[in-house]
Image 1: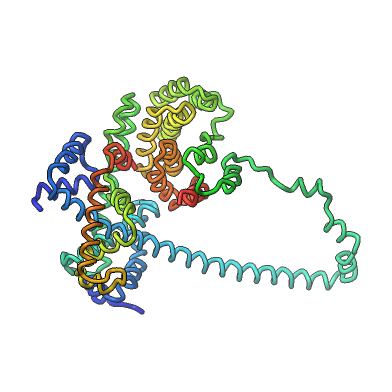
Image 2: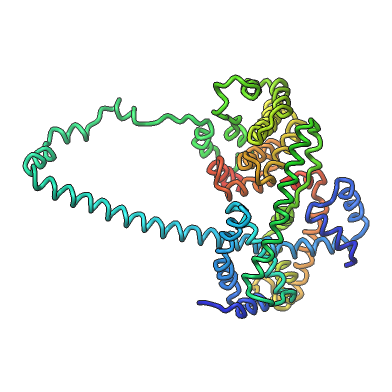
Length: 194
Length: 295
């Protein structure tokens, strides 16, 4: 099945039945951008793939939140963001030279002060993976897919009614909050280092 | 959510807070229940992004596997055509010149017997010995039941000091430092690696010296149960894995996971090992094994 750009945008925007196929198609069709980035900026394959994935995530979020403005093709949009993001890539490279200089100057303790831009993914995963699947699903459906508690109860046999879903959602939220609070400050510092 | 709250939550999740700011943020969280709620909601919202990333990575893997499958089919087809071609070619040539001789040689029963029955000593010769300690470890680990696996056992079975063949026979400051590292003389090793770092200008050698320097801390931490050395090793390896230009980036994932296992932090080790498996590089098969055992 082949979808037009407008259909892809609509599927993502309204969380349509074919949203996963559309995301897969969008990614597949964007892959030639990787070669372009490699040729023009000398980025390695792995970094280019990571970059493309991040851009598609940003694009999906923009479409969902209604921030995406169609000015040209979807791929033009993706390539434009990639070019801008690559400037940061070179900034990182410059940073590395400074960091080696710091080391060579013998100030070894300074290494911890060298901070790179990092993704929040690992930290979020660390928190969420401490919840069981039921909690993850209910919080995800409520906050990310904007499902009402009534719909959640209807779609899941384990929740007898809206009231039960509400109680479980409340308990899961509290549990997650406790996980965030109880995470030891030093442990968090270790995670930041990953 | 106010702009300041929004900003501080963003900074917290993006790890952009300094140590002092982080302490202040935790203090604020303890007294401000609303801020805690907002942070929790933001964590759930960000989880959507994590799931999307995983979905795209899976699509990428599937596309890659499909491509390899197609290539393999093409390779097999090409091999069959080549083998058939060669067969036909030789059959035609040999058939023309020495048909009887060739047939009688190929059907000599005595010769065939000698090929089939190799002596046990000869058979033994063909087996290659396992050189890698870690490879031996893989064979040992399945004997341990999954429940009994503790991080210390994993360290015992999987940790081995880093070995760089390149500097074995050379007599330069780097080799001296490496020699001390291999002899478990950690203080001398560190002294010499620092010397190398101060005098060398070649980026590749600097990377190697830095990598060994971190490994010296790790070896010291593991052998002497020294928490400070482990912390230092962790700082270095964490820095290396974030540097796409660092020559020993992938091995650093492995050794960082060893730090976490030694510190009895299997959750953190799992995160690092997953990254290594994703890169399919240095000791990734052993990383997969550890991940299975930690499940």
